[in-house]
Length: 168
Image (cartoon, rainbow, N blue to C red; front, side):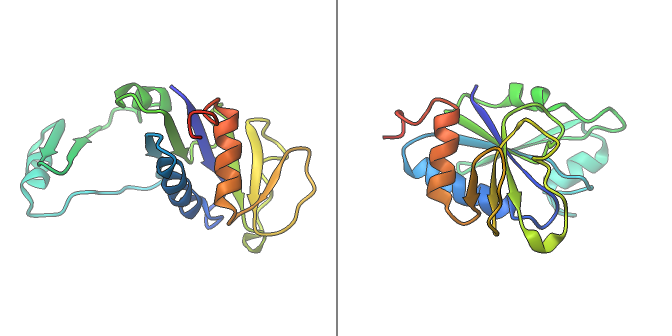
């Protein structure tokens, strides 16, 4: 499975970049799935809904299905957080999996960087960061793209994972 990440500190533009990249890459006829890491408690369900009631009654896993989508929720109930590899093993085959976050994992990544956040570049300390998408010009030992140049970033990622020709 081909895998590429978008990493960066909070408010660096990761989610916006991910959204634009998925739109761009799928518009080229490739299939993409995404995995996003959250550092906080989150819920995709709402109190009072049947699936919420199932989970709160003690179900370990709940699958909610309709003709438009399927949601699979797993309650860890004190078990350890699954690794990125564990999660990837659950995905159906696609051309590319884009990962947001997981900055400590060893897959190749592009760093989203906004100078106004005042955070240091992750790229300086992490060789898995293969390029940086920045809102300000930078001089680095790897490619730097304009944070809003989605086409150039997508071209770079697809070349990195060997899908550039498949998208032509």
